[in-house]
Image 1 (cartoon, rainbow, N blue to C red):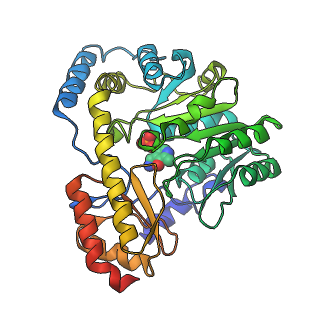
Image 2 (cartoon, rainbow, N blue to C red):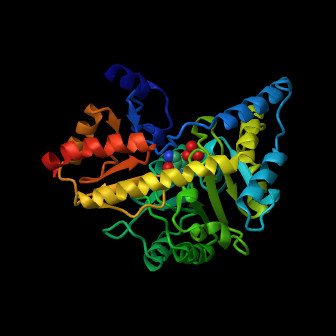
Length: 368
Ligand code: PMP
């Protein structure tokens, strides 16, 4: 380990990357992996078959580059998100991580700032450092909520080129009121800032009207980022997308690599979109498991946040790292997000959720 660290530090790295750590969610082989907010429900057989058929067809033309502008996929995504959007408003990439990276490549960079409100998705500072953008950590209230006034004031003070609002927020799980997005947008337009709402978990929200998609008309600097990794159970396929004004899509084309979205990826996404009814039915079951976790944790006297996502963030644990370890010894891997007294668990299938709750019941008294 030290040898490889020495070897890394001996490389002629960019100064701003020295001493940084890569994204590091543990990848352990365990019976119950509930740590990275994946969709744990098995892929329905008819979807496996549709994807296989789509990929088989695409394989016939793999000697050619794919459709660089993936027009069919963009128009199917537009039909899925609705809100009067068309393919000129849509863009896709290899996961919403790549979507966010492309946005930073265009609107961030040296001398510019990215602001977000912590605790939030741990990739934002890493995406900032990768694009040589300064990361500014905005603050939330003690209960991790964010009011329109506080968010707008902090954005006005810092004047970031890009503000990312994560809603529902990872790791806390709660969706923002649309008033927060509106207030931040109004503050950011006074200095020509871009506002991104990262809605990776939007399909799990209790109130679907909270989406920032409905704020897009007339807001040319607003970008709503989404992913097929969670609700569509396609984390392994790497497909994220955003909706914004057509000029934003044109701007992204300045930095995207040519043919970044492979023919195999496009075929996979199209097949999954055709079966969205089947895939989104699993979302309803996941929401049930999530609500079951929230209720059970409340009964144990813990403090789970009200969740609009496929995971639950909870506090009130005395020794959170000890509890994390106890669960792991029972084969249940959840996430220690580094906030003392708090842990985060992904809602699994009914069986996985039961395994988590049973293990928790066994250990919680000792770790209060
Ligand atoms: N945004 C948020 C808030 C996330 O939690 C994640 C994944 N954990 C992502 C974006 C990235 O997802 P993907 O690249 O798989 O679309």
